[in-house]
Length: 335
Image (spheres, rainbow, N blue to C red):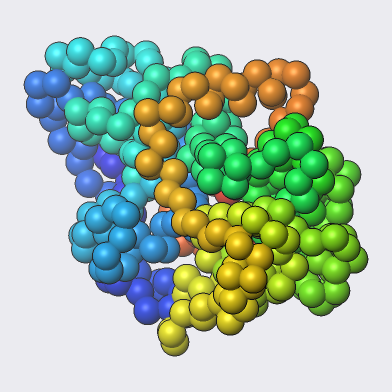
């Protein structure tokens, strides 16, 4: 059996290039005692992957040069040698990496439902992005009914779920996204109360129009100028959740920090970072709650699926050029 893999070849400066990864085809090794072989069907593409390539102090060790690129995945166990946790035929999700086959002890993998039509949701709304949204807005953002919630990247994998959870909890929700299609998706499909198109209008005027009395919670996925704009409009005791800063990830110059941070002092507000891995013991409970919301029609998900592990690099770029809608997923083998 041949395993198609994307290996990290160098640490990129700025946007990853053609030389960042090596695409290789290698023999699948024989299983050792306690190991499983997973044939992977889909992998998750997330902005955090850019940070995992940097050799800097972070919440998780960087991907090593020559190692398979880290990524969430779903697949089917097709062989098992003495595994106490999984058997042949189980469908699983975990950190399988950007490769066609995973071989290992299954650490970090969990069993999922057998319906393949639902499997991409375990990379999105029921996976890491969904967990990030759930714990970020509920436990870090501490939303309550009546709050005005502003979310950047509101049409993305995390932001779209953040906004919907806030609506479920009785908040007024405004989303920031780029382009009319994404703004219509937020308001017409997801039920947001308003949208700001940062590509075609001033974010400052958009916030002023949609949040005339200010913001109670700002969930930040992009950083930079948009974070600075939000700081101007926070109310007393506001909470700012720092989830990501996609506008800064490929900088070749110093990262842009917030200039308007004294608004935190004036408004007795808080700004707190969150990493979803801290909430791992609670994932199963959150998944059950969110699955219930989906069954009730209160929570929607959208996966933007592209095909071919050979096309990983070009698909990865969609995270940063905005050419996607919803959760970005790569199907390993084309139809």
